[in-house]
Amino acid sequence: MVVLEYVVGVLVLCILLSLLAYWQKVLDIWGCILAFIIGAVIGIFGGIMWLILLLFFLITSFGATKYKYSLKKERGVSEGKIGERHFKNVLANGLAPAYIAILSFEDFHFIEEKWIAEVAFVAAISVAASDTVASELGVFSDKTYLITNPKKRVKPGTSGGVSMLGQSWALIAASYTALMGWIVLFLIPQALPSEIGAISFETISATNSYILIIIPLIVGFLGCQLDSVLGATLERIGLLSNNGVNLVATSCGGLIAWLMILYLV
Image (cartoon, rainbow, N blue to C red; front, side, top):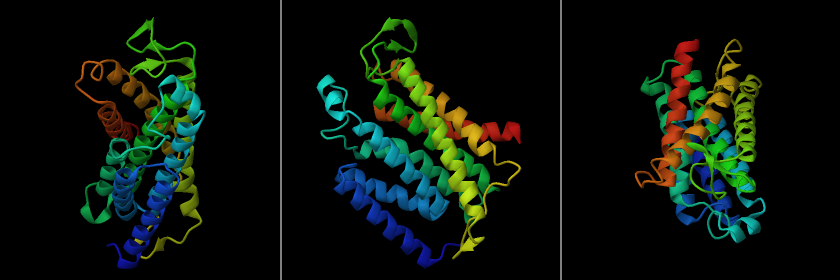
């Protein structure tokens, strides 16, 4: 059961973060409104630690977006007018994590053990981070190829285009997101009281804590590849938009992580 004080605290925090994102031009106004809603859902149903991990994703993604932004704009591969993200971007990367947070809520009894949802949540965030960083930094590669046809050279920034630079950053982003997920959802809660208000910080056991790193790392990197394949196929023929591709990839990331847990544990 969620106590009123906790809900109010989460809402206030989400308001402050949304205002900060708008002030720093991370998101446009509608992106901030949607980010507030998604953040509130994740914070209330998942937990404050989930919200911290989401904030970490937002900060690192914004950093990758703003890196050499003028050069990206000059080459026609920049995001937004000044690097800001819009509500469709927020929805594409935030809907799956928010859905997992709702499923994780103990009172709903959708998932028996919360740590399973935690792994799926980190995996979905890992896919989003891997794809975003790979896309934003991979555009500086001199050699980009279509993932469905490695012999075909394409312009950097092309949907479905991959490069060694982009793949390297995809792996790095998946790795640091998985590691941060382990720190935020396993290490930090060990030092906290078992409960704050009515929200339990009990998390994955020490025995299974390695799963919180391995599965999101693998799923994050593979999810980025799935995003590229969908971009080279369904997006190129108009069946999916770029944001639609991102939504499918993050959703599949959470689902694949859950299936891997069922097989491994």
